[in-house]
Length: 340
Image (tube, rainbow, N blue to C red; front, side, top):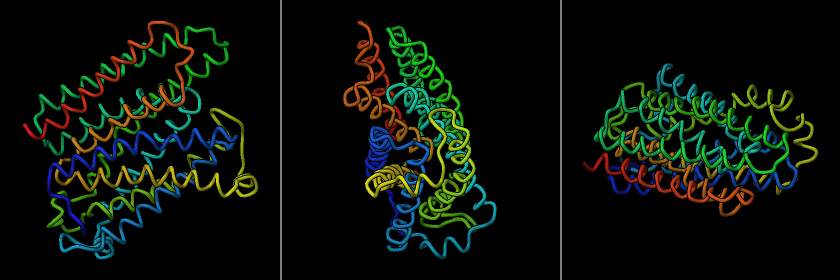
């Protein structure tokens, strides 16, 4: 399999992760603008995640001289490793669906900073404890900057909610904020389970442990299989939006709408794959923490492209600028934590 051993290359890969994780939700916004229910979009998204994982497993995961190729590595994996990687997908999927719902209710610029920012803080701590890679002072100072960014995001939301929206619109955004917090807590722990299924010496894998490409495939299976529970509940007992059915997915969905969802899943899966592959050189806490700088990218999309704060009152823009600056400083410090 292809192995990344350079920290510089690993950082580049995780920056790509950050861009992918911060951009995939644009496909949800795009399909939503065409009146396609986000619950049905989510099925195509999950399919795209699995497709990309399998493509990488049979290409980068099956060539090269390092480690073990995909099929032999899959067959030698222990039951506990399978369980950890699969459970990581189940937990992630529950949290990610909360993020999708909160985006639909509150917008990218509100949902991402709260949900993904909270997931970053929890995830860095949860991954650092078993694999303490990087200078803890620098690393956790970077995490503290992310917390500051979350606070300023909440302050900007408060100003936005004070505008002359209807009571129903304000309540919808407020509920979306609460859902994003729940999603952030769930998403903060999924990476830890995927990491537990892996050996981080990719050249000489521990017996029973997975390499990165195999872990990603099992994780993706966990996402797809758990969607029959999580997303089915959301289809028939929706927190937001209208009830929809499996029949609508096949009857009402055009090829274009299905491709938009699959493309969104592929974008996210590229990010996840690069994060896991880079974790061998960067360490899981740094790889995960830097990748979750996706919030900065998503907030930029939400503010500049989707104009989610165009009705916000005077004084909101400085809060957004501080949020962006705090995220950027936090990301730089997380990178420097391994170097120093």
